[in-house]
Length: 441
Image 1 (cartoon, rainbow, N blue to C red):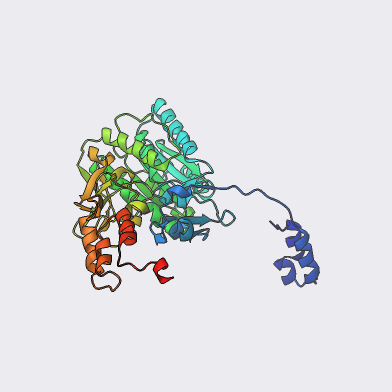
Image 2: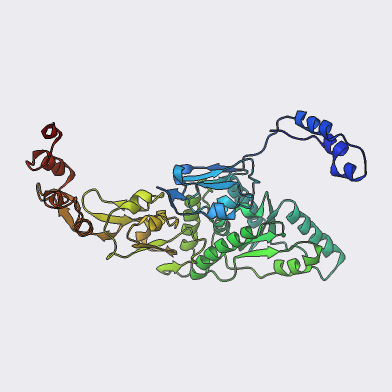
């Protein structure tokens, strides 16, 4: 990739031109062209196309990563059943991995399991040293670190400023948008009282909105499980003028935490991390409702609502589901659903020709969440020639009704619609009324 050396800007830069110096633009352009070299740019993301819930069969489902990317590095490729990420445009914010519900996009610099080890080490060390109600403060390694340092210096000069409390554990990140709900819940399961995210105004507006949506989902779960207090919050501070407000927010009272810290290790799979954290939080909860309703936006958990009167059990939704949440039954016409697998991408909803499906964001605490539950089943339709079941009664009747007035499906052709694939071929070649190529010759 062509790169420009600093000496070229010093000799021919805008400042030099503005100062009235004579510049040979042609010579400068040729010099810039010759400055070609190589550089290493970290690849901040890892992409697994088979997990991507963006598109199937030219139908669009989840587009969270495309919507949140401020560098326009992610584009839709429905023909390839997924997305395309331009590594040269990617700035490494990690927001795409935070909002991805399936884990198809993950932050690779550093990896999520490395961040998990870091969080676990910080919290366990703090607890062994006698600390209680730790609050994890996530901040950017540049602007965020500078603000925290400014707050510390202000506390030394002004008695009215408290500074960073002892229970607050700052953790510098490459970018504050690089962590999401799976790491926040994991930190709380490890014993953190709160997780705070410091935004310094350098973040794109869609980053703040996306993180707040995930905070709303996580806080809804924690509140309904009986954990008292506000566990997740975005703190805002741009410069020294906001230090007083930041100081006040850091003095917030601790929220209720788990009875004993979890011991599981953070995995590379996002969905696994969410399940491990939720399992521990549920086990330590003071209340346990059957189901927790979640916000419509940003939820990676949920169920499906099905209109059984509309559904013909065509099973197109099964083919579209990227997470194997929807399954058929090879023995009988059934549609089964595993709620734990559902990523709420909406591909089944957009694919369904009968518009019989709708998303239902929630966290179901019953054991059925992990099991294949039948959400619709129908009487099979049997072939009128061999009596073998080959479809559903409702689907075949619907097809017959739609083709009843069609000129090509009258008489024997209409009867073939009621036959299985094998008998249909046999009937065509054994019928004396059919015109064959040999007869034309």
